[in-house]
Image (cartoon, rainbow, N blue to C red; front, side, top):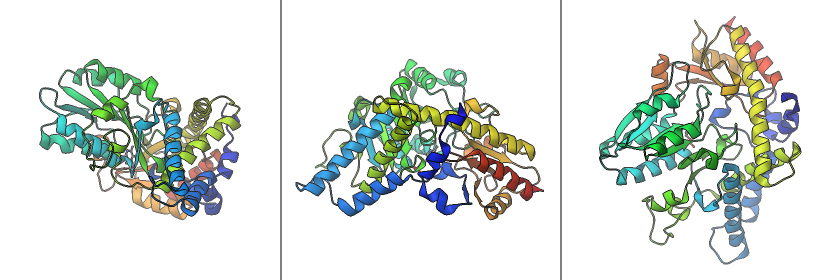
Length: 408
Ligand SMILES: Cc1ncc(COP(=O)(O)O)c(C=O)c1O
């Protein structure tokens, strides 16, 4: 099956890969490269229609149309029926902060508990913990030692005191997938809401807000082959009742009430084009139905192909005797893999790997609680390689050879 994924065709669409060669991008969890059609969409915006929206002249109307088209494309990518549920902005963190502040304003005893996890990026932890001064009680849902969250461990934490469960769709550090629909079902079972951090999941597999039945979701475009931007999706009734900051002239309805100020239009054009990229990939893989179907074909093919990358990286790491923090099962993870090698400082190995031509990362992965759980010092942490669908097995083999040279 994996041989069917057109990885070389995909690579050819990303100019940065060829220009940087033989450098290998294995730090995609921190931000991914852009396909040519995304670069073209950004350039087109800046050259042809770089004006404020909401004017009566053609260029301004073209900006309005572009924003609306990008909302529709992103809605299809998420499987949301209503494009007005898609709100554009700077990044995921600012949206999590915005929703958390709004919830903080309305939260009251006896339903004043918020569940967070020790697997999550701190963007989806610190933002909720900041509500403690507003009377919120934080409840920790702890991952199991293998690096996974189990809904069975969440259940005893849930009762009618819980207002919201905030968790990730997949670990940005360990790569483990979460049973998202199970979490939403459990949260809703006690009348709580679910806030999903989909930042790391977006580039790797198919998002389905309908099947998952989550209430809010955030993504960062720049992790999903778009320029730097982020977006929030929320169920319309949730966004309608969310008390947001809004200037008087802004309509009191989503998405406008959620989008404070002017965002970066060219990057929204880029995000729309990133969805086009996925759709085109789905069509190249034989899907000739509607947009959502093509997107599903692409994202499912990406997920399957990436399993072969996970397996290959795990095998290379085993061959150097690395300690992998997380699952050895490629079917339950994405190719984002954290590890250490006994007797070697992570920073030194990553420096040496940079000399070998690999961009990988070391440190705390912006997840202090996770580091604590893994018994790792914050100022040392671990190493992480994070691959996406434009990486290939040849790069993984070279990575293994490079790592063996470095730790020899
Ligand atoms: C899982 C996860 N959540 C949230 C964030 C924060 O995203 P942003 O940079 O868009 O605020 C990141 C960024 O690395 C992340 O990996």
